[in-house]
Length: 281
Image: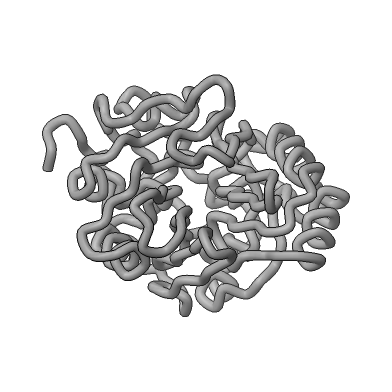
C-alpha cells in the first residue's frame, strides 16, 4: 500500500450486506447508482465517456466491485477525472486508497472533513444506544479512526463548484458530520444527498438487508449534531429535487421524493431524531 496513504487500525471488512449489493441502477442517462453491500457509490457521466466522476468510495474491500462496474459502464481501462466524497465515514471511503492507486486521480472533500481524511482526527465513536434496530447495536464494530490520504485529497473550491462536474454545485449539509456535503444540478434538479437523509431505515437490519424504501434522516448511530442535520434537510427540501440518490437506500424520484422529503422535513424530530442517545443536542 502507498506509504503516503493508510486506513485506520480499526479498518476491516464488515460481513453485512443487502439483496441489492452489486446491483446498479440508472437514474438518468448520466447518473448511475451502484450498491456495494449496504452503501451507494455514484457514477456521474455518460456511458462510454472519458469524462466521468465517482462520488463516494463504498465499503471496505469494495474496490474491485467499483472498478469492475465502472469499466462495464465507461469501458475497459477507463478512469474518472476525480473522486468526490460527501464525507469520510468508513462506508463512504472504504475503497478510496485502492481506487486512488488504481486510477491515480485526485480526491475532493469539504475542508472540515480533511482532518478525518489526513490522519489528524478520529470521528466520534458510534452510538449503539440509539433506538432503531440491530445495525445500531452493531455500530461499535464500525471503524471510526481517521484515514490518511496524504496529498491525494484536496478541499472543494470555495465558490461551490465541483471539480470536473461543471453543471453541479456542492452544498454544505452538516449534521451527520461537520463537513458533509450534498451535490445538486439545477438543470434537471438532480440531488446526490450523501447521508444528509437516506431512503432506508439504516438502523434496522431487516430494512438494510432488503433495502426497503423509506425516507429517513441520517444514520442515527453516527450523527452527532441533530440541530444541524435538521437544517440541512430543510435546505435540501427547498431545492425541490426531482431525482435523489442517497448514501443508503434506493433512488427516489418525482412525487414520491417530493412528498417523502416534505414529510421528513415537517416531522424531522419524530422520524429522524432518536429518543435517546449521547449525541442529542
